[in-house]
Amino acid sequence: MRLSSLVASTLLSSAALAYPILERQAGFPVCPFWGGNITVPDRNVTPFIAPYQQAPVLNLSKNTLGQTRLPVPGHIAGTLSGGSVNITLDRVTGATAYRVWRDAAAVGWITDWGQPSLSAIDTAPCDGGHYTVVAMQDNNVNDTSMGIMSLPYVLQSDGTLGIASTPVGKTFQVRVTSYNNLGPTATGYNAQLGGCAVDPRVIPWGTYFYVPDYGYCLAIDIGTWIQDDAVDIWLPDDQAGNWGVQYRNITIVGDLANPPSGSTPTTTGGSSSTTSKASTSTSTSTKTSSSVSSSSSSKVSTTTTSKSSSTKATSSTAKSTKTTQTTTTSATATPTNGACTAANNGQTLCIASQPTAYQECVNSGWINFSCAPGTQCQQSSSSSITCV
Ligand SMILES: *[C@@H]1O[C@H](CO)[C@@H](O)[C@H](O)[C@H]1NC(C)=O
Ligand SMILES: *[C@@H]1O[C@H](CO)[C@@H](O)[C@H](O)[C@H]1NC(C)=O
Ligand SMILES: *[C@@H]1O[C@H](CO)[C@@H](O)[C@H](O)[C@H]1NC(C)=O
Ligand SMILES: *[C@@H]1O[C@H](CO)[C@@H](O)[C@H](O)[C@H]1NC(C)=O
Ligand SMILES: *[C@@H]1O[C@H](CO)[C@@H](O)[C@H](O)[C@H]1NC(C)=O
Ligand SMILES: *[C@@H]1O[C@H](CO)[C@@H](O)[C@H](O)[C@H]1NC(C)=O
Image 1: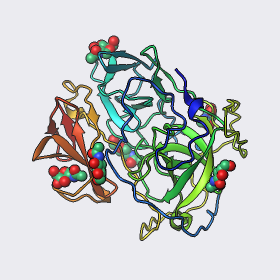
Image 2 (image 1 turned 180 degrees about the vertical axis):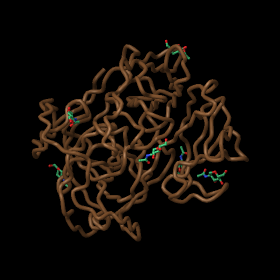
Image 3 (image 1 turned 30 degrees about the vertical axis):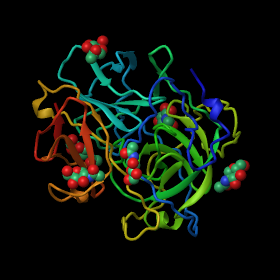
Image 4 (image 1 turned 90 degrees about the vertical axis):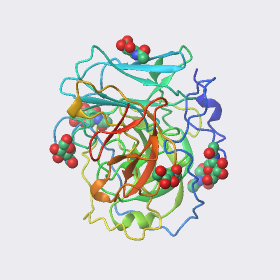
């Protein structure tokens, strides 16, 4: 059921965005924003100072230590049954855990404890949600640990998962802001030039797009104000503030299986032609300029990048851990259980007054999440939780 072409040209109205590049799946609710009901304030266009470099086509094949990343798990599949999707995948040699996301909301954190098969259940499938799967070297979401992300998968009309097609050539207008936070993004890959935050309902993770005046962007992150037709591009230091808030017509140019060549893309605006074939002229993930000193002072435009909701099955109790699931719910929280600073990003704490809720420190701010229906939060260490 591929209806993406129907919504191709009507997407410039900023109000109710018809998700431009989704493959729809009738009969399911609209996919929620990963962060819940967050109202994005209006943001006016600001003065513009162009970046000092073009962003390269990121290549994720090696991690920041120069090691080859774990590959994408084989045989990613899924079946709809009883209103839930059971997602299965093959073991990856060298992996100790796996993550499954739906549009950046955590579907499962699967610790490999020797179970006969690896699976995660999405109890709340939605219309056109994109599933992303990754293998990890250890129970840790950082650049060293993360394998290569899968292509996005969507639920098809026959109730199985299939690879979502990437509408190469499609062009549409988005609000482009910029951020300069350092460290792991929501996918675990480090924030860097050529990496961007998106609303994965609109632009699935692992999509390459071209942003005039910026260069190439690989969708690897999310942000609380990056909803619908908005993207957040990474720039070093003051260049993020220099970018400010701008509108640009971006063009989808490829995905992790078919990265762009690095030349300026042809835009078609309408029906998509899948012509990009890896001619791999590109480049490592090092920053071209940047004397990164991360003064995230008073940037007009910096938005919060966020690690996505993660339910951590703790490795210390590996025998008994199971895939746990969460659904993201509500918005930015106030700290209740301690400090949330750069030093404890990623820390998760159960909320004492709400047994089914927890909060995660995301770039120096608490965000509330809730455990999957029927599960309760248990503090498994001083900084991580399990929903059981
Ligand atoms: C979302 O939040 C807005 C304002 O905070 C509120 O008016 C609205 O009712 C909320 N919607 C839902 C579905 O919770
Ligand atoms: C990354 O580089 C490797 C070789 O180093 C190449 O095989 C692969 O196609 C490249 N991937 C992307 C997405 O450019
Ligand atoms: C999901 O599929 C796997 C592999 O077939 C199976 O072992 C597991 O029991 C299934 N989970 C559910 C909840 O049906
Ligand atoms: C990633 O986490 C591991 C622990 O699991 C740690 O040893 C390593 O230094 C971390 N790497 C980075 C780049 O933070
Ligand atoms: C995007 O393209 C449309 C259609 O050509 C045009 O009307 C609009 O002004 C463009 N937006 C930007 C920011 O260039
Ligand atoms: C998040 O949880 C805390 C602790 O229960 C609560 O004080 C706060 O109001 C919550 N925030 C939202 C936006 O629900």
